[in-house]
Amino acid sequence: MEVGVGIHIIADFYGVDSELIATTERMYPIIEGAVEYGRLTKISSDYYQFRPKGASGIVLLAESHLSFHTWPEYGLVTLDIYTCGDPRTADDAFAYLVDKLRPTSISTRKIIRGDMIEEAGENQIEEAALH
Amino acid sequence: MEVGVGIHIIADFYGVDSELIATTERMYPIIEGAVEYGRLTKISSDYYQFRPKGASGIVLLAESHLSFHTWPEYGLVTLDIYTCGDPRTADDAFAYLVDKLRPTSISTRKIIRGDMIEEAGENQIEEAALH
Image (cartoon, rainbow over all chains, first blue to last red; front, top):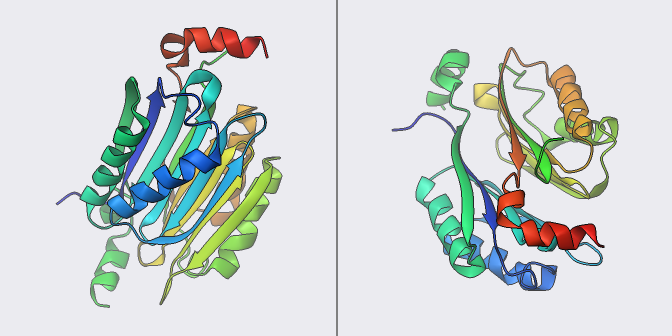
């Protein structure tokens, strides 16, 4: 099993349809759909419309968060999907976003968050195991 | 000048005082203080208290976002500071968080987001420059 508290997928999507990512109105169902498809637990979400175009949004999850920021002038969406719990949930949410946004290219990194907890917090881990 | 749309500091803080990071009540002034110290523009923020302890929060910024998630049982705070605009704002917010949270060790990565826009969206960049 991988050590750490969660999986963080950091992805930049290029070549996305500029009109699709220009507004929160069009991004909202895509982001909320990804949360649902990934079986993630939404606590709250907030979206912001930039003028003349561009959108940002963040979903606070029981499993951490999912966020996006768009630059329609570049066809760019930057995405973060950070989940603790089952790592497949992040992969599924990511796959959903690829399907809906249809980028022509993707730059992606997958990082394990809190991967030094064994070294840094050995005593705390033992304590936590007693809960 | 670095290419891309923004700087993303991804940091895991270890050895942080468990009591300090157990509640949104104590994390709130630290996070909001970092936004202010970094001269970042808050759109909205949301915090969530886990039971029995642990906190998450996210600040949607005009410059992107700042988020945190705590695991008091490990003395762990995972932080993301993602800003477009002046990269020093992210560095300043980060320095503030180090000062207030006083981790015994830090794992940090600094990523340039959207760093392929020149290749992927050359036409769009020219178009954007005409705005």
